[in-house]
Length: 504
Image 1: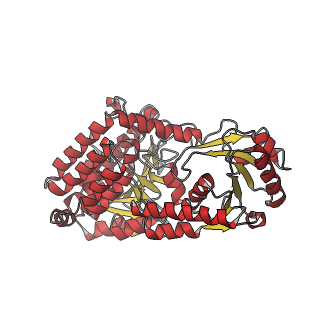
Image 2 (image 1 turned 90 degrees about the horizontal axis):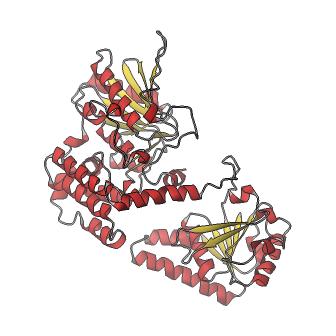
Image 3 (image 1 turned 45 degrees about the vertical axis):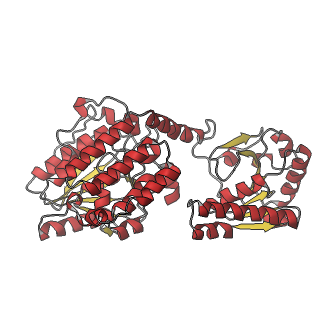
């Protein structure tokens, strides 16, 4: 599930309207206040719910589908925190999210827009938390990306449910963390680990986050009940309660290490040449180490964030973000169409394209068989695959262990019967229609029912290939671009009879 979440929300995630739930748009939050009748134990206000349980204020973010940190959420979060901190009957605060996300990032639809003054809180939630004498606990129920993790890092304590990934993926939309992430994360886990997380945008799973100290505990079972009990215990123990901004041990050790930024510099040179947000993110993390004054570091981060926000790279990468997701939506294929489970794959042909396609499957964790007609051709194809993986190790793109794992997923075979149980098979021989038709006839006679029969053809008639089978609905074109294991573009070609389940 983690990889699905990461792929789908690989950057600060956007809330889509009209897809799930019935909550009003954040923009309409102020106009859509709902006051319940006297005696109702829970007061609902906009996109954040507020209630008091056993002396603990529970704030639940409810902004479906992924709880983005919209202007409405920020407004009501600040309002409810003020209420809780001013209430003598409240001894602690727990903040959580409704559904599968805690806060899955900023709402990037707000980027580039002039803020509405009526939607701006009087005091930012983070400032209220850091000034609070009452313990504030983040109960991370699901994805906490971007502003979600940054918000959690302002809290005194962080608890998480199993399987709740955390990360700062803003780099992947032309930005850098702009809510204190470049200053707090190095103080918590050290500059080198923080730099890697921020420059790559890759998340931590829950166990990694616990090991690094990003979260304090993993709560099995009822997260909210566990968080309330935890908060009450901390309140009873008394303060002061720890703030990440006050941590100095990690950055002081980093300051004494002359090599602490070498890996980050190497990554910029190798992977982010010409990307201004990479350099701005690097400089921001460096400021966390070199500047004693936390607030001065925050100002440096915000200045660097604004440079990236105003740069054309940000607009271009956000456009790509939306375009990639739109490409996955086929207008006449309903969202509820059942998807085929792909647990095994095969390629027909182990040459340049077939080998690259096999590597793509292996890279995705899917075992794949490569079918060739002769032992000589098969050995050559497998040796090229191994050579390519070795090059990736030498360039630092993968480790030796990752190379070995991927090679173990690739098996060479010489007989069609050996690929009969694959969930998907991709024909990747040279562009000869008669040869491809012959291959599809063999696949039809061999492959299990329900298998996807795909062709990598770039221009030949897919329907003529499908006509060689008794299952044209399972036939689809999958035009990879070379090198197939590197290029992210895949052209999906629909035949006249290709069914929705095959496309989904």
